[in-house]
Amino acid sequence: MATRLILFGPPGAGKGTQARRLVESLGIPQISTGDILRQAKAEGTPMGQKAAGYMNAGKLVPDEVVVGIVEERLEKDDAQGGWILDGFPRTLPQAEALDAMLGRRGEAIDRVLSLEVPDEPIVARLSGRRSCPECKAGYHVTFDPPAKEGICNECGATLIQRDDDRPEAIRERLKTFHDQTAPLEQYYENKGLLARVDGEGGIDEVTRRIQSALGG
Ligand code: AMP
Image 1 (cartoon, helix red, strand yellow):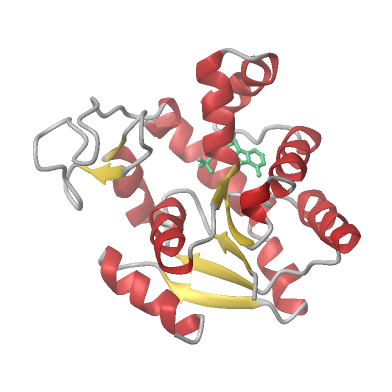
Image 2 (tube, helix red, strand yellow; image 1 turned 135 degrees about the horizontal axis):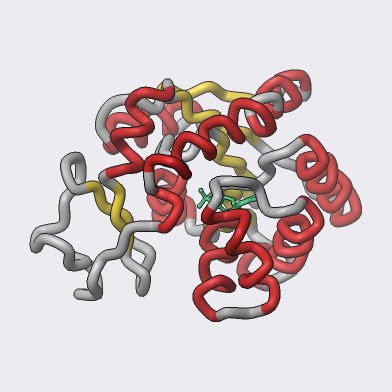
């Protein structure tokens, strides 16, 4: 049976890290609107150029842009057996657009996993975060360092820091989360889909909590 999951939570809650683990254990793709937008930005496509200003400022890219991205992505072959949405939806109109999209496809969300982490640890997590521009592996200078400083364990590429992991952008992203995204928790709770997972502690510990929330 196809599994359709949403990983919900503030920036730096561990959505990307945990989504990559679920990809391995469940064999379904991770769909990260942030990754798709960063790729478009790096390639300098018209969409990427438009999105860059919002992203660097820690603001949300307009709904119609991200809804279009997700709609297109859900049609790909590898998404037919399920998916893990990471970083989408982030606003009520996005959640409603997703429901409409899935309704047209005769599909439904199975579970929304909300990774709960307070603001203070988030600032430390994001400011030490590094990622591989090639294979997208994620690291943290203190909590999850690569074997060789600045180099990806998986593919040997030089690790980078995201433009929006600077202190001013981090504060703006947290504000955006509380103002525009956090209300979605109630939306999914009302639909009986929400599972709250404590996102503090080690990466393995959080993976175990997610597995038990999924009944595994
Ligand atoms: P993320 O990698 O999920 O933290 O996303 C990085 C940035 O991409 C966000 O701060 C937004 O500027 C943009 N972005 C990603 N997903 C969305 C979304 N669902 N809605 C609007 N903007 C998004």
